Amino acid sequence: MWPDMGVTAMQAVVLEEFQEPLTVQDVDRPEPEPDGAVAKLIGCGVCRSDWHCWQGDWDWFGYRPDPPHVLGHEPTARIVSVGEDVETVEEGQEIAIPFSLACGTCDLCRNGRENICENHVGLGFMNQAPGAFAEEVHIPHADVNAVPLPDSIDAEAAAGCGCRFMTSFHAMAHRAPVSAGDDVVIHGCGGIGLSAVHIADALGGNVIGVDLKDENLDKAEELGAVATVNASEVDDPAGEVQDITNGGADVSADGLGIKTTCQNAVNSLRKGGTHVQIGLTTSEEEGMVPLPVDDFVSKEIDFHGSLGLQPSRYSEMLDMIESSKLDPTTLVNKTIDIHGVPDELASMTDFNTLGIPVCTDFTS
Image 1 (tube, one colour):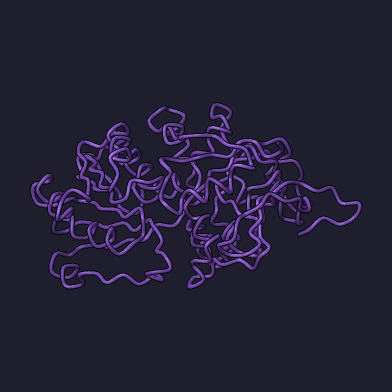
Image 2 (tube, rainbow, N blue to C red):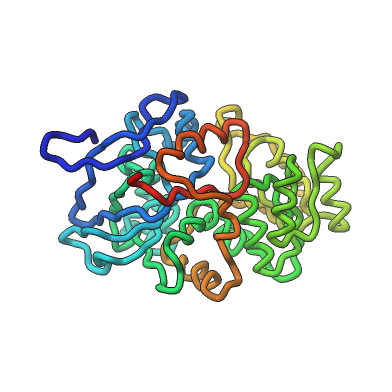
């Protein structure tokens, strides 16, 4: 990874040791593999998932790279070089890059489930895929994983539709799915949760946001929530949702991934409801959360996971952005340069972020 004599270096945010301060360093520029491409970064969202990786979480499902490692997994970029076996991706194209990189050839990929590819590699989370807090990033299997952006969508603005937004789109549009008139409750209104609020509203849902912070709930209302619940001010947030919806929500989602929000989300549902788990757990839960299994049986509640968005279905989200039904820029609360990324991630330790911060300058 580190630059050698005669090799042109680039700036990148490097994880040297878990939980120790991140630094911007010079590293080698990537070269395209035969089926890969290299892209110059235009924008990259700064996500709490990057914070989890920095903390050393998620080793229980393989998202723990060996330092030193470049972080970043929500990129938009412009193709600057392609490998000799690449057929459809061309230099100069502006693209989005899913964090759940697919091989394109396994049974799951061939059946439209590239987001859970049998050979899945997590961009910025695994040794095989150095991340996108850098001037350039390598895209393996580029014909699958480089998603062209329409000319009408600004690539810098589209960085707001990275992991949190597109994962929430898959959750609300596909895994629930939300239908017109559904009561939808979102527990945890950070970047993922607020994205889900906006998307569920666009799909016709009556959305209720639940969070501990009034500013997050105000933003949820701005994005279309018809009601909100401050969980710090009530004894039973799920009961409040039950009252608001006259018996429970049709769809619930946990955007945070802690035991409390997951349990409250499930307990917010009416009979026959569907819970969608978007947030991944912390080192406290290590992927294990106790849930009311008997309610799943007696109320016929469905529990669905949601990971990323298939490249083959990006067009659905992009079409809604083009027609102004969705606007990821409303979630972007600030833009920063690459040297601001370490501090932005550090602020997430105390949940001191609102919406989606995006890095748009990688060379300053």
